[in-house]
Length: 137
Image (cartoon, rainbow, N blue to C red; front, side, top):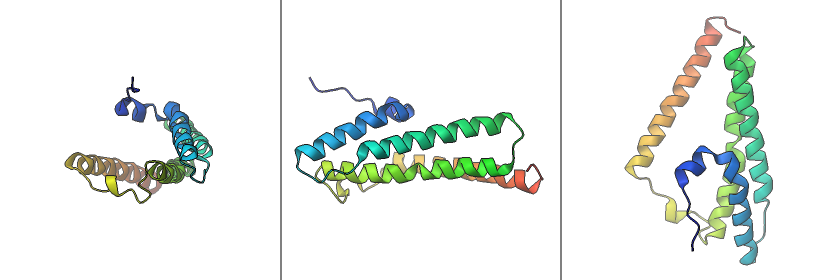
């Protein structure tokens, strides 16, 4: 019986599923005789960056801290993309599509969520700029 995968729950609780995903990618690459990168190392780096960003974000929301901490949180969130890029490349290789062409188009819902996510980032950045301009540092 194939394993039932629930993408919504896996994306919400990504830090708990990232290592199993990396392990599956690594196993598939090894079975194919592909050069094995470090998907588990990238998964660990991703989890560390996400957790550290969340902890620092929680601290900044509850206390009067310098704005530089907010900027650090933003940079940590952006830095978590780097290990994800590595994992995605290895997943593409493991699935026999190194260029990722089979999943290179966007649906209407993809575009809608990109717009919503972009708006959320813009609000976050606008709030950060307002804090800096109003002397909250």
